[in-house]
Image (cartoon, rainbow, N blue to C red; front, side, top):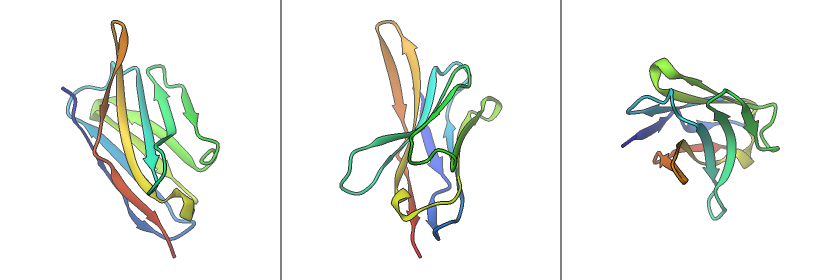
Amino acid sequence: QVQLVESGGGLVQPGGSLRLSCAASGSISSADFMGWYRQPPGKQRELVAGITRGDSTNYADSVKGRFTISRDNAKNTVYLQMNSLKPEDTAVYLCKVQFIVPWRARDYWGQGTQVTVSS
């Protein structure tokens, strides 16, 4: 089993920056997809940023140009650099690692880390 632990969340003022980390208990070098999701209070979970095995990236329109997803296979960690933060970025951020197995994708989720953007 793969266990994921997010860190780096906290309280930041609008316009500030945070870097989230998601450390995996095992190797992520063979992961087919890794993503950061967020879920504001009372709202649906949404994909913020994703990175594939081949290092292709995709971002939600709301964060394009501000957030950057990356990974370090040697450290078994995926990162989300968040710049120019806005109050609407406030949410619990969760990471997911996905492995494609026969017939389906197998997903592993972290518990999440709180990001609060407020003055």
